[in-house]
Length: 245
Image (tube, rainbow, N blue to C red; front, side):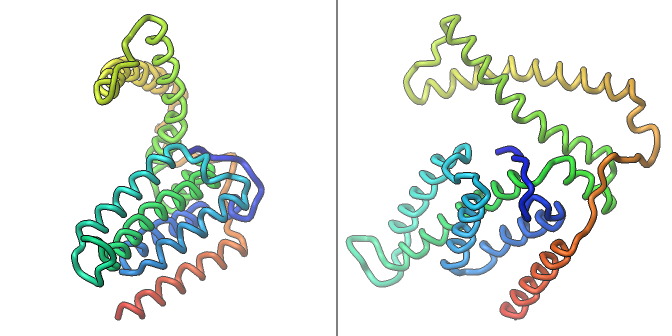
């Protein structure tokens, strides 16, 4: 996934507030032994993605994650003997446990996709730097987020070029995965080293890191919606702590 520009309320929300919500939802779905919580979180994230015109089925790798969720559900259904028998070795408790585990996986994936598609990397880095993160680390974060899609395109080009040259990428499974990994790693590594070297020379020429602080063209401000979202986050954390105690 990558950032998709927009002017929605979620796009305008403070990046640190969204990051805090992402962390809290991820922790909460694993903290509580509830089946409804992860499924509700996944459903809300999917609805928000749909509302912001980001179809959930366009999330890269979603089919793999759904397949993994089905495998997890089946594994729990067959490996949990406790509970009322349903049919054969499958029990109601096993089905419930599988739904809970699969829901946690989908909730984390969908909430993370919602965060990535509505949060601009530069603003996220600026917001973290304003909270005390060294700007060198912020630059590393933005660079990593920006280079990932570039390396993905380069991997596709390398794959197509190797097919033209007769590399046997069409071998059967699992040999195909091994050949693809083997023939893609070295060219991608060389490309990554070349990009990193060029970037380091460019930043050195601009005296990056010379001063302890730096200025920015764009500043992240805190608005009324950010305060409301942060207050709701604090209330949910307090309510969860009260419930646990």
